[in-house]
Image (cartoon, rainbow, N blue to C red; front, side, top):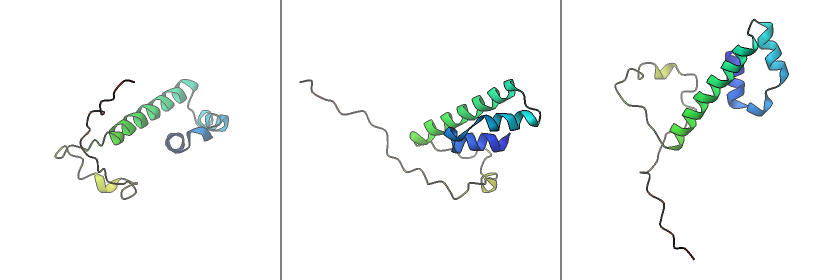
Length: 93
């Protein structure tokens, strides 16, 4: 299931019926597959919104000790964003 969720995250267009058949073969039913897809999609959406807006994790929330355990540690670029400003005004022609 986790391999499927990772593949869905990294290669969404590559998901085929074979993935669903494999999940069924190890005990997941169609409702489970739908839940897996929804959870992975929601998590990816939330991460992309946070990354797109330059959201940083709040310090002193207990995540610091766990950060070195993340498998992708060092593979992500640091977020360096300026303050989001309003769009410039345009003049109507």
